[in-house]
Amino acid sequence: MSSSSKHINSSEQLLDFIKEKFSNLNQITKENILNFKKDLESSLSPNLTININYLIEELSQIIKTKTNPKQFIEAITSKNIINKSISNIKKDISTRGEKVDSILKELKTAAENANDKESVTDLEWIIQKLHEGDIYEINENFMENEHFKTEINKEGVDYMIQYSKIENDLQKSKDYSAVRKNNLNKNAINIEAKNTDDKNANINTRSEPNFIIKKLNPELSIKITNILSKIDSPDFDIFSLDSLTDAKGSLFVAEEIIDRLDIVKSEIIERDILKNFLNEIVENYSRVNAYYHNDLHAADVMQTLYTMLIKGNLKAKMKLDDLSKFAIIIGALGHDLKHPGQNNMFHITTRSKIAIRYNDKSVLENYHIANIFKIAKEDKYNIFKPFRPEEYRIMRRRIVEGILATDMKKHQKVIGKIKNRAEVYSIKNGKNFNKMFNETDANKLFDAQQEVLNMLIHSADISNPAKPSKISQQWTDKVYEEFFRQGDLEKKLEIPISMMCDRLTTNVNQAMIGFISFVVMPTIDILFNFLPEIPEYSKNIHENLKKHQLEFSKDEQAKKLKEEKMNHNNNN
Ligand SMILES: [Zn+2]
Image (cartoon, rainbow, N blue to C red; front, side):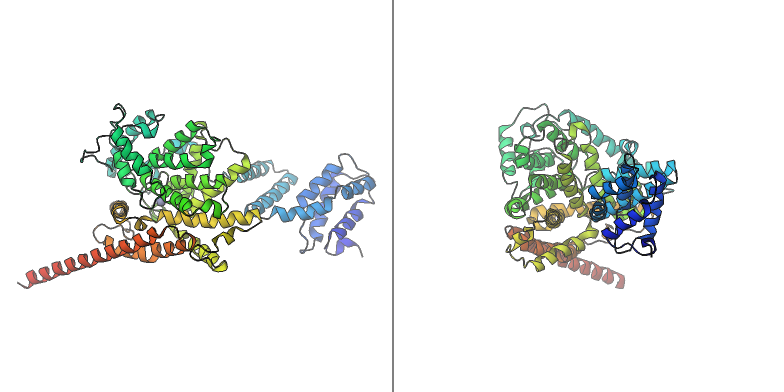
């Protein structure tokens, strides 16, 4: 019985099969190898996986110098090609991306054999994009012309007319951007802010700064330094800082934290480039478009994450490398970059350009990530330039995975994974936490670290109710105002008003009770097992919950009184 009539199950059988196909030929040609490929494909047992492309490529290389069957078979054996083509496949499909890659390469070979040049070019392009991680690369023209009105693409709605006010505001913020850019090289700590006694100073909008020409005010400088000295504290007051610095609080926070990192102290990254980058990130947030999801929220998440890392001594406990720590902190600052002020659902419903681009999946999160890397591609902002490709890959993965974990849709998944870890390793009150990182396998260690980093950045993102009451209340006001503005927009567009976005019917205290009880409190409870060093977060949550409950019962009483009064009037 010839071996071609039965399945090839082992490397020995594969070698026999090769011998049988080639040893009786006078001279081996390329055509013989292509025929062999077809025969092999139909004879392979499903139990044996072979990287056929690799094998055929190697055989084709050999016949360039050795067409005599005896020499040909000797070369295969001496180069250990059979075993390599078997072990290669295992490596090839270790990740989903690599599996896709191997399928695409097979397709490319098929297209080459069929002489289909157009498909070969297309497939080469796809494979290249996959390798560069550029699947979601943003079209340059789109980025340059980007504007609120082009973001929303709902048919039949004339945004130009309805939102001329927003357009005007945007223009103002652009002018201001130009002024700030001129000030780019100034050391943030040395700038003079406007008179802090000026109670009329509007801290929510970026008014024309008047600090540029004024000289340094030592008293103000001390106040700012005092606030910044609490940068790793759970009661850090970002709002006071922002008002003292004429709405530049986020840049102060970013520079203060970055300056404290070992990777920055070692001066691997050029100082100017780092400063330019931080400034550009902050600049690309808009307090006009997004009342809550702007640079101040971004800096708050960065500061909260930094506090967790420092207070919990997490770098040592999690065996985090400098690159990963740096990356996740940068990720926190960029995690809502260019937020337009409406949520994912709004973009999906209105079929906005970014929803189309990201196929309705973590639309904003993908958009924020892409914008960070878009900025970093420019030389003057390229903080990744000094790093080797494998170092860049680590940082990119940390940032991409971390920011994707901030999609509220992933809440259950992020928390579920961590809960599971807590059970497996019996992690409680900080005990056994380090066991998670006893992995010797680098990939497993990376994943374990990433799961915790994902929980940290997600917790920091929803940590408003874990802050001191005075600070927490300001965030609540901002986030609901942003929701209500989305609701106003939805009303104008005559589309269903999203939950908690109707300013006429939403009771903020009631909504906050739900959010704290069902989302924030369970998250911080789990976090506490990993990070017992910050009990303030849990304490603040309980206080804030009580406050909202009290306010809500007052709201209800007032509503009841009003109704009674109305009934009374009606009866008369
Ligand atoms: Zn956020």
